[in-house]
Length: 371
Ligand SMILES: NC(=O)c1ccc[n+]([C@@H]2O[C@H](COP(=O)([O-])OP(=O)(O)OC[C@H]3O[C@@H](n4cnc5c(N)ncnc54)[C@H](O)[C@@H]3O)[C@@H](O)[C@H]2O)c1
Image 1: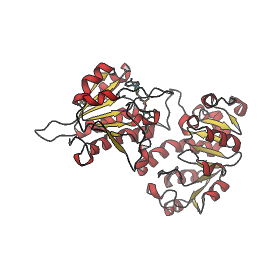
Image 2 (image 1 turned 135 degrees about the vertical axis):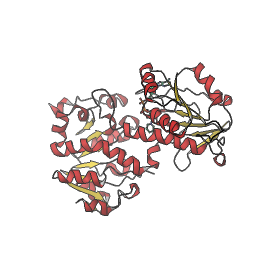
Image 3 (image 1 turned 120 degrees about the horizontal axis):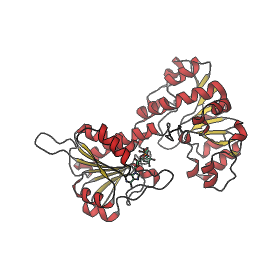
Image 4 (image 1 turned 30 degrees about the horizontal axis):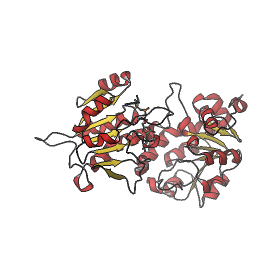
């Protein structure tokens, strides 16, 4: 198969969808890989690194889309890319269709086969191509929180780990899933006193077993949250109710109960945030202050660490990309239910029910194409 990797043109997206190591694995299996010049540069992979493994460099985004049978990307296509996508072309990337109707219509009109990273799903209902980015965001949440606790950037002036003779900082993590677990692990590693709150008792049992002694769990409810927040230095929001807006666990009035300079990192910002005062921010301007409380609400946290994020993402996508390239999308999806779940739009039909429902479009069961 001919695989094309364009440069990401969405604002501030520095990741690339394939590393040179990934390109080699595809080439070894007889496929051709075409990389747009400089596509990997911001992730630490210059053109030469791809050429060394036998990939070809193309000068423009048009040339990549024109050549490729399968496009591998990171972010959803944006408007200038719509017209480049061809009928029957396989596009394997994050789409997040339900959040943007114009993209859905553009892909229906293109006649392409859109396989979305975010809906590839394992039998246990986990989402293997979302997990790596949650892991990155969780670890980053603590790193960013520690930074913004410094006085020159309006924080309380607390060193999370403390020093001999001085108590360590206190961290509250709301939601002990993928993001929350990684955030708690990092904070614990720095020496902070960490509390994870969740509503899933099985999850808390597990966390209680695997976390070090400076991490404790508490059931998440308003009374417990109000009891803890006056004593916290850093509060990380990482709850998720699948398919729904995040619950507002920290309300505006609660800010008054916190100490000035407390830092709130709302990782759940992409689901509306779990702090009432959360509004999305960017890496250029990541924080704002309300009632002396520092808010960090960047919606694409992994974008700031493209080297790590690119490798984490491609570690997860490559096994699927190899199946798609070896077998073609139809056979690969027939033989692997996880990939089948990724199909969202096929040759003008919406084959993912939630996307059809979101915009009141006709839903066509994917069996039409896979039977
Ligand atoms: N900002 C970013 O760059 C970025 C990157 C990756 C993920 N995210 C977001 O981070 C959020 C968390 O993702 P995840 O992968 O950790 O999800 P997850 O499903 O693994 O974990 C969510 C946890 O929240 C818990 N929860 C639900 N209701 C709760 C409540 N009322 N109180 C406390 N806990 C509650 C669940 O039991 C679960 O353990 C999602 O909104 C995700 O989209 C953001």
